Length: 119
Image (cartoon, rainbow, N blue to C red; front, side, top):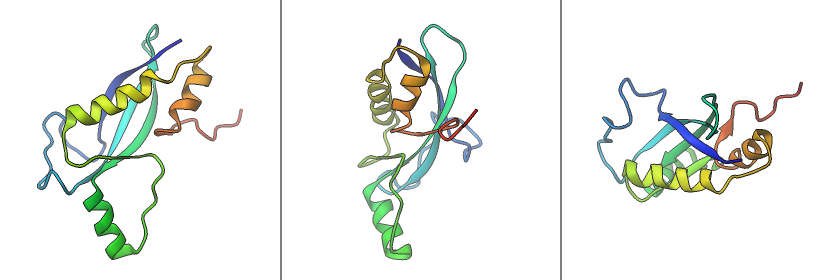
């Protein structure tokens, strides 16, 4: 079974990621929601990541003295095609016998909406 990226957007933007451009492409941080499901299904689950640059992290370190790093994708500059390519490569490497197996692997990249769900 394989996973595929079905949709990618930011809850902080009024428009699409295709229309977004940061004021400084080498200094930005933006949360992104990924909707991922299996190739053979129209359903998907959400996985949240934070995409930022090293200079954004450095600035947070200067002001807050720390920054959490889980579920982050760090890039040198804003390039949506590079960001999407990195995400799609990670997703392509997450295969398994069922969706639960795949989703657990994907949760290493992004915060899965059901990550701590207990039935």
